[in-house]
Length: 388
Image (cartoon, rainbow, N blue to C red; front, side, top):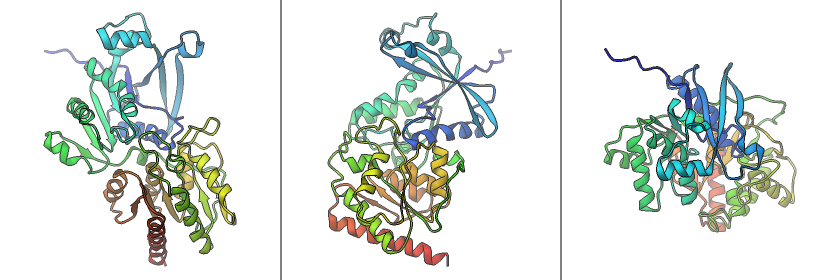
């Protein structure tokens, strides 16, 4: 008779960070716990674990073990982040040498499962090779140490480089379970004879958190992307020259309709803005540019993901450039329109039965921007008339 295998202590959710500046990425972390628990992969006996690699051993904070307790749906999860000195990681990757007296050496064999988020759309090289590969550290550990890997629901691809595509396919073949949130890569998965399951994006499982805000009736929410507004994000730079004019003209159209407009950031660091990618900085720039600021409310507060989801849930109509800002509207039944810079938008919208509600904003002219605005206003008008 074989031995009964004892449950291991730790569960590693790759990319887990409730305080990520990108509230969409943070929403994935909130949602991943509920999703994995619902699917019975994550048990209440598990301790959540992550590793943080550091370079400077003279900074005491780098060497610290970070302990947190996370309360989700009335249960407190214990979360520990262990430090790994970069030389130790180099020894592991280069020579398969594990130092048994370190935090890593003492814990790696006690990890039950690695579940990978990859930022929701980071399993792709659309944002460049570095972002794609930097999100694979924990996946590489799972493969190296033969730990089961769950590929959490996300968009796969696109891949500009063949070597990145081959690496992605290799990882998907290793995974014991593949979840996806749209149909954009199904053809490739079938070609590779990979089993998969389509499900909701992880942010679906994060509940909105009400807070002390009064929302005006029939309000319009607009999420302004710092990535597109600043137009210098590596890999996507110089593709959004018309975006500031598009947002400005869009606001003017809804002002003509007498609506209150909320400028809603979704990826931002309140105290240390991420250059070329900060939504709050972009929202402030939009607000300051407006000649007419009547009925314009700038959401200039340091909010967590569930709180922003609550604000979006209170809108009568929403226009978003960040995919997860749009998900917040979709999952709370708010009519919406997506300003897209990737095929992930169309795939995600259509996955939820929403058609002809996205437009690509890459390299558009002013005329095309005005056509997009007409399409948005028509969508809003149709939604308004259908509820009368």
